[in-house]
Amino acid sequence: MQFLTTTTESYISLFFTLALMLVLLYFMIYRPQKKQEKKDAAMRAALEIGDQVTTIGGVIGRVVAIKDDTFVLETGSDRVKIRFTKSAISSVEKLNMDNAPAKK
Image (tube, rainbow, N blue to C red):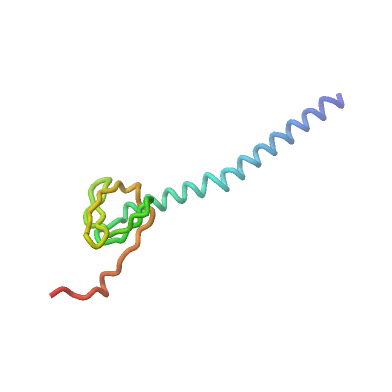
């Protein structure tokens, strides 16, 4: 009888240890990843013409056109236009147009 109690206690201990590890895994990996995905989706949804964008490939330019899942980036002194998917966005910097000089 002593043997059965010890075995049962070890299984219960193993179960709680495994459950604790799964909870830690959720809070340390899964949850922060979901938060980052929501933040990235909001950033892509808020993309506007005139924003400065850096792509995951390192291309930096200004957004000149936006369609459903793509946008056109104008980059370089030659004003080369390149089309990207919105999933290629690494970061977006909103340019403040209020301080820009008025065109005459």
